[in-house]
Length: 116
Length: 389
Ligand SMILES: Cc1cc2nc3c(=O)[nH]c(=O)nc-3n(C[C@H](O)[C@H](O)[C@H](O)COP(=O)(O)OP(=O)(O)OC[C@H]3O[C@@H](n4cnc5c(N)ncnc54)[C@H](O)[C@@H]3O)c2cc1C
Ligand code: FES
Image 1 (cartoon, each protein chain N blue to C red):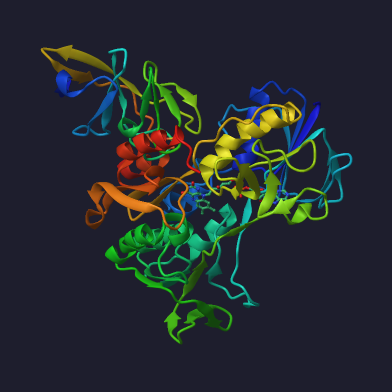
Image 2: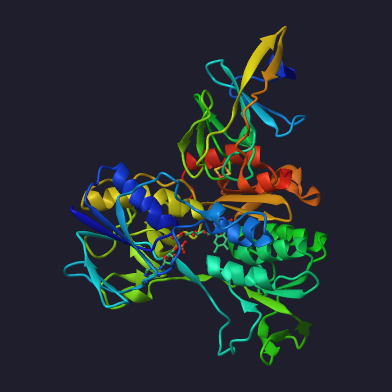
């Protein structure tokens, strides 16, 4: 479990980028009050989903508008082809924690080349 | 509508094929493309692909399991259109007759005016084949001269610098990107080149190239001569509409379309870089040469085609483009013209991370972001809800 931020610092409709982990993770607080965490890097190219547009349970990538379902990570709109990896979120004593997935991430091609 | 022929097998053509199927078209679909490649993405050709960070396979636009139920005619050029029976004539002598025709033939890079001899080492960049040829020539230590400081020229300069070439950019206008972004912000982006040791020469025209078999220099109108091992000509693109001349499809700067993509010929629509749609907000035709336009407009054009032109054209979001230069992300949305005011509202130009808002009579009409993705996303949304004419 990795501490991300104070719940009070993440109002509804906002996102937090946890970049002390590699690859970084984006935590979203939806307008309905739910918290979701996914890999921050879009699976299409190099863009940060925390900088994207949050609408309902979906985030739209700020670069080419792929949409990902935050609950499942599935792509709802191209150009992205692969789902984004999802992580668990826990709130304890006012702190938001991320429970990282042990599945491999779907990083975009350029980023993949950089990390190997 | 029982059959549709799409001419141009790239971004706009593929997205129109998808939109037609999504909107219930189950007839015969033929996609004609002059390149031998399956549809691929062009923006990385001046960026990650040119730098060697991604491969040809990474450029594919189709997903692995995608099946549009289309017949692909790749490697053959359309040479004409007979408007009476909507017959697309192909260069191999065959033809395809369809109830609907989609024009998605994009644009072609302009070459230097005048009869410049075809010297080795001189490139333009539009296609995958162009990118492969340019990449082979971008050898560390060589001197590259980029003619034209537009987005593609600027991106190639950035990538070549990363690959260890010496780079000079020559631009005829007083500032780079002045027409798209205005002089002040164009100058601000020009500084990105200078930060990385790229020489940017503005306000001077190119007179010609020197060299016997291979280029060795660029002559400027002020008498200067720049040494060059490689030259990239990045002076824009012209719409690829020559094959429609004399067909009865009205042409101007591209295929002239109404605000739903319909052309002057019933049953023929046009999308992407080749198409100049009427923009009700601006009050004139406007050719959008960016990726997002080629992705969004096909939905509208498909509805126009399938409804026989009766589907109402929904309002269009303001044009949006992005560019990556020297590790910075540049984004622009909206329309600007001389006389608009520009104010920096986040960050500052000196730190190379800023957001600038363009206003006309106090109304925001465009926004530019450099490494300000989150704020830019909000502003772009906001612009989408107001008219930017
Ligand atoms: C190097 C480069 C970098 C770019 N970077 C960016 C960027 O960072 N951001 C951005 O917003 N936009 C960018 N763009 C622009 C973007 O790629 C285009 O807007 C987009 O490709 C337009 O798609 P299109 O399908 O209309 O045209 P095109 O992609 O040009 O495709 C047209 C296709 O039609 C084929 N064709 C032409 N004539 C015929 C014929 N007679 N018969 C059959 N086929 C024919 C062509 O061979 C081509 O395959 C870039 C473009 C280039 C070249
Ligand atoms: S980088 Fe996210 S859609 Fe392209």
